[in-house]
Image (tube, rainbow, N blue to C red; front, top):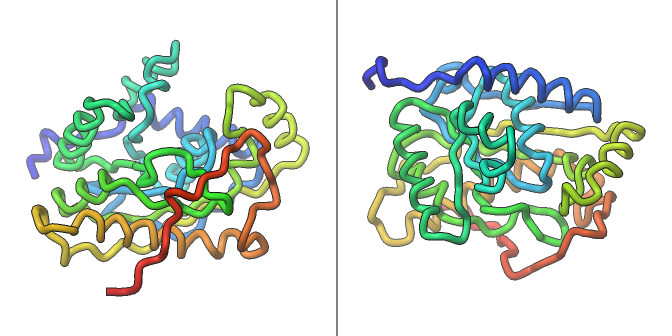
Amino acid sequence: MNTSTVWRPPLLWRAAQLLARGIVGALGHLEVTGDVPAELRRGPLILAANHISPFDPVVLAAACRARGVAPRIMATAGLFRAPVVGSLMRRAGHIRVDRGTAAVHQALDTAASAVARGSVILVYPEGRIGLDPGMWPERGKTGAARLAIASSAPVIPVAQWGSHEVLPYRAPKGALRGLARALVRRPTIRVHFGAPVALRDLHPGTPGSARRATGRIIDAITDDLAPLRPDEPDRPRHVDPGRPSETTRSHRRHPPG
């Protein structure tokens, strides 16, 4: 790799991660477990996280700072159109994803180029905030898996639990109520960095490779999520009345091999 072209996170993004740590600390108790190997922290690396709340990016920015990682986040285009926030997202090097449009492929191309330059990329393989009734990871989209197979970059699953108790699904609607509730109750927010997912036997262009890789990534996130919610194995205690429920994308754990 040509080190002259290696992307390095700007100071703005590192400062934002520090701010995120303060915000999460004010609203709850952050517990980060697992680790990112030192040799992978500057990339190339793909972090694949479950998506349970609009508050997830703040939580994951704080957790990644705790592990010395400054990922470029693949985020919905709506954030980039927002006043102030959109400009900050672009300056920090994050990647815009225009979901539901043909331009979504441009995001994958941008991410592939970023990984090739040594970036750490944070993706949500589910492609949206999950709607599983039990808040377990849904069946994933294949974009993250195709990126991993094409780049040969390692994939670390990131399981998180608790951010759904801070901001509701329909935020900004109800956001003030959610934040006030969190300030009083201070929920425990857990993030776990798992072991790299085994994908080396899968190759670009081989039929079914992307779908098998996606299944393995979602399986790994699911396995790492279970210990974070031991007393909530079926349904979450905290119920968001504004969150829809859907089973059409329920994920069945794949057998080993």
